[in-house]
Image (cartoon, rainbow, N blue to C red):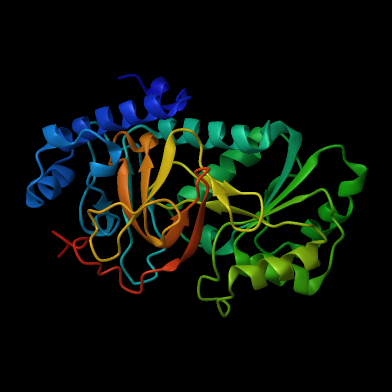
Length: 324
């Protein structure tokens, strides 16, 4: 199998065929995943459809090395570790990640060189190993604009760039963690109309959590935009989903969301039902492409999905096997 096959998926049949091929490869070459499958007493030869693929609980990235080859580790991405334990995603081919987020951004938003990218990600900049910082740093560089950059504390410079945006032919992308975006609009309100404001996550313990509708309404008013965009990604994945408003996310063609039963992790629920998010990310070719996340959500008929919450401890029946 060639890596380029992953990012040229253009049909449901092609995706499912590649997913099953990658499943068989990882079931044999990723030791942790292989042990997990054996523990479930599943014969990989009987898995003929993607809804029968066993999904590895995301918690395994906190306790095990999840790799599907013996190549040298090029990059290790670390989670924030809000519970004191960091997930580690050990990447043996960083070009897969770069191709994934570059192609994903291009698909949803067009050429990055058309943008001024302003990033407000203080909690990520303050630690090492963030996959989000790696992606945004590269997008800032690819934008090839001297005004693009990270803004940790230089609010005055940031505000000036935003206010002068109307004089610039470039599109404006303001991307930040929720509490940093709220901090900014509390200092000053804007009227940006055509800018894209994208939140990348919650309060990180800096503010009281808000429901999405309240957060987006506050940010829409503060920035003067109609919709707030969102990015769905995590340390354990090499691809991202994007929402252009109302919390409805889309995935690139090499990524798919399935919903599992919260009482039986091996059962996939029908469209429209609420349950645990299972992610197929073909870009995770060298680790594990089949991840049972800690998020609750639902998938719609058109393949879009929503995030509705998180499991408290993710101690879901059938989904905590082998975790110790």
